[in-house]
Image 1: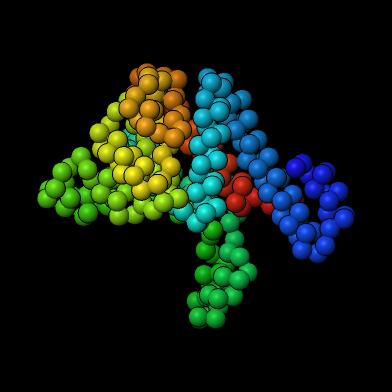
Image 2 (image 1 turned 45 degrees about the vertical axis):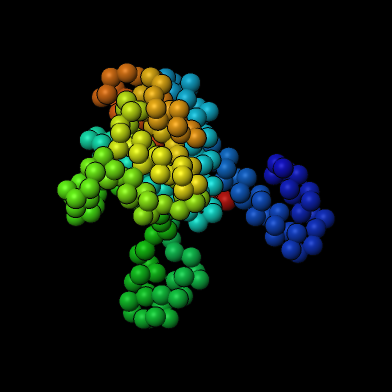
Length: 246
């Protein structure tokens, strides 16, 4: 249903129906704005045009996961581990849009403590729950020392992951064993799996629900394209959840 059709039915409906239509109209508007971010990405990086469908599908998976109250788990090695942490930074706080606390939660904060709650209400930002699996040093070193080192990410997916969550595995080769083990656990738990790899087909590209394959074969060149791809995904998701209808 486009916005003009929604407005037509709005003029005919009950109060409840009108609210539903207004919400639908806003959702359509946010979706359109999110997709414009994908247009901008392809305009700036024409080489990614061949991955447009996959990037759009990855966005839909992440969006749906958050809509259902899920979270995003991200894992990678080396530069890809840094990318995982980078993604967390864009998702867990404001990226380019303001993310003010909603009035209901702000009121609850003030009820708990008027002084502290006021500061929290004014400064906290809306967050999209995202966890990078490389950053838990005590857990990682304990597990690698006591158990099987290549299963470190898998153990965290086993602990954090729930059906409806999303696992994003970043591997320039697409064959990083620790990422593949984690993806296997994610699939077994009923999670969606997104891969972000290089041009060559790989085990991860076969296993993932969606795999974005940066059209390069050298590691540093693949990583140079991964950054604008995940920036675009973060922008799209932020636009959908925190954009305004102004």
